Length: 239
Image (cartoon, rainbow, N blue to C red; front, side, top):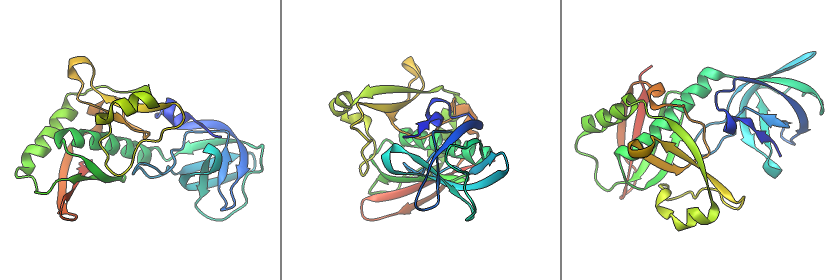
């Protein structure tokens, strides 16, 4: 099992850790990591590992067996031996852009309050697939509403509920195709806004910015038809 420090502090850029295993595919497993593994539409983090006498560029990060997280080298080369103390450093610019896009997609699900059938995140843009038989009539209104939520600079925080509480509140789940992972006794929620200013609350395991103002200006991209009942809506970071 890998301690997931990115969950407790998504702003950690560098941290010490110890190598606990190598995967059959050539990945490095640490006892704790700041690298987010691919999941929930968010790409795995990239960056670098360094240790006395060696260094390794990390291309991506994936989930491994037994709740472990594996860092995947950019090129085949000797791995740090098990037990080695390493310094892990994120490609912070890429990760932070993922955080901005991920939080912006939560806002998109507020502006378009329809069931979500899929989604994806990159460093430049993101998209959600909605159960939306007809395309929206006013693109400008959607873009304006998104940027208005960003400008409100709402706090983005996490909360936790039990599996039983989630089953009793199915309306918290906006995704149609993927249910939040249960079985560990509790589920993480991401809350945007607080009190009377709360605009969103939904299960999510990804990394997010601390306030919506950190997202920056957004531009609405393509709205594409994806099947009889679905529309794909893209958003782009303006910087």
